[in-house]
Structures are given as structure tokens and as C-alpha cells.
Amino acid sequence: MSENLTTTIATKQGHINYESLFAVVVSTAVWRFGYTIISLVLPRKSPEYCCRIITFIHGLLVAFIGINQCFLIDSPFDHPEWRTSYMQSFVLVASLGYFIHDLEWCFRYQREDKLMIAHHIYSVFALFRMLFKGYSGAQATCALGSMEITNPFLQMRWFIRSEGMYPSALFTSVEITFIIVFVAIRILLGTYYMYIIFKQPKNDWDFVALSFTIYVVSWMFMFNIVKYLFTKYFGLKRKNPDVRKQPS
Image (cartoon, rainbow, N blue to C red; front, top):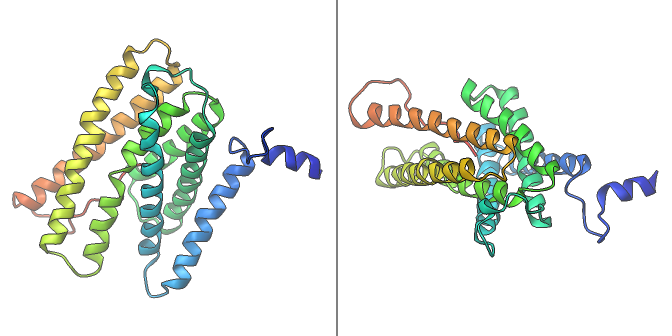
């Protein structure tokens, strides 16, 4: 049995095999452990506060590593046939574990709306598919890293307000930065990437479908952001204006 376990968690090169169910379980457990530690260190903070710290960490980690995959020798969107590299598998399994953890948290505390729950369920499915697909990992991690770059700004916005610094110039500057980055990355760059994906005949139908789905979700969140902007800056009344935890 120990030999089978060794085969499951290690590759032929002696490295951890991230493309395994065992790695997914470990990744999820690591994120949950981190959340538990933060909750113990900050006992006076709410569960959402602690959860958003984990979300902030995930956003920074995935954005930093994922965006690096966009600057390979050649554009990853021109080569969907490339085998998923060791680092790309790490990014995918790390993000998959985070989304499983966060989805469970959302169900437990019921703090998110239906769109966010649907986004998390989709993210788990899409990351699981790309992790075990074995190729197109460069495209997946580049797109994931690009999208996650907006998340730290959103979490900083929430932390600033939760610490009583709303309204303030700092809050407004972070909020506007988030919106500008979201539009630039998720909408403008996302539209460009979708154009390339649709034109690339080597892409599998499932990758095209997964990419188009997250593109549509981005526009749905964009619609909510536009409603928020009109609510806040054009005088429309709303009880508790906010932009919830943004998609990844």
C-alpha cells in the first residue's frame, strides 16, 4: 500500500505529482489550515475577514505565478497543444484547492449571492478539468493569473471599509483602481483573448466552452459593477452599496 501511495504522490522525477486527487485534497487542506490559523490569530475578526485574507493571499500567489506563464518563449494562446508544465500544474491545483475551500465556506456562512456561488462551482469544475487534461495548462494559468490580478484590489477595498476608513480618499482610490483594472483585464483583454481562442483551430471544444463561460461571467460581474457605480456616483439610492468578492 505504501508503494501505491508513493506512486500516487510522486512523479518519475521524484517530484510531487500535482495532477492527482491526493494533491487536490492536500491543497484544499492547506487553504483550510491557513484559514484556521488566521482565525485563531485574529479571534476578534469575523469569519469573512479571515476568509478574505485567504482570498487576498490566493490572488497574489496565482497572479504572480500565472502571469509569468503569459511571457513564455511564444504566446501560450498560439499553442494549446503544449503539455502542462510542473509549475502550471502547481498553480492549477493550488487554485483548485482554494476554490473548494472557499465554496464550502460560502455554503457554511451563506455570505454570497447566487452568481458568486455559480462562479465558484464553475471554477472548481473548470480547474479540475484543466488540471487533469494534461495540456493547455499554459493558456489556463495565464488567463487565471491575469484575472486574479484584480482580486487583491477588491480585498483591500473591503479591508479599508471594514476598518472604518469609509468614506475616504484611500477607499475611493483603491475602488477606482480595482474597477479600472477589472475593465482592462477582464473585459478588454478578455475580449481579445476570446477572439484569439475562437480563431485558434487547435483549441478543443471544451476549452473554448470553458473560456467563453468565464468570459460571460465577467460581463455579468461588470454589469453589477456598473449598477454600483450608478448607485454611488449618480445618486441612486441603495441600502448597502457594495461590490462583493470578485470572480477569479
